[in-house]
Image 1 (tube, helix red, strand yellow):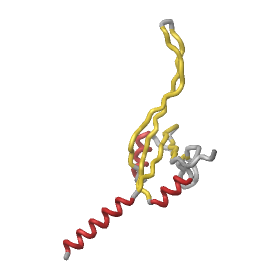
Image 2 (tube, helix red, strand yellow):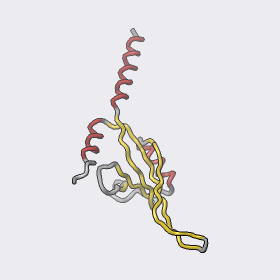
Image 3 (spheres, helix red, strand yellow):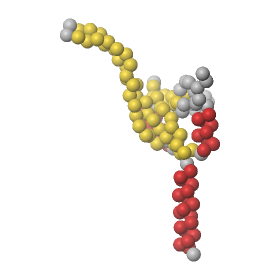
Image 4 (cartoon, one colour):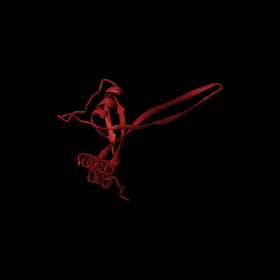
Length: 124
């Protein structure tokens, strides 16, 4: 009887895990603060403390550890380079800027994911 109950509980928890959906966010770390984009706003949202001030971190690793503590899992990173210039045989000028973005995911309910998705459509 105990074995049947144990198997039933394992199957139940396995089914619960299958129903979880992933919410993805893109994190930008700039000037020791985190800005997140979940696709629902045109502007990245800075993380705030309880007083409404931007959370400030001493390092990128501190920010990544904070995200992990909040239940986010780092999925990928992407680099975006902007700027231009020309450097030829006789010199020239070049100015580029590279930003690194961090993609995180977190298990959420269908309702939570649906709310974000419903706010991510673009009005024409």
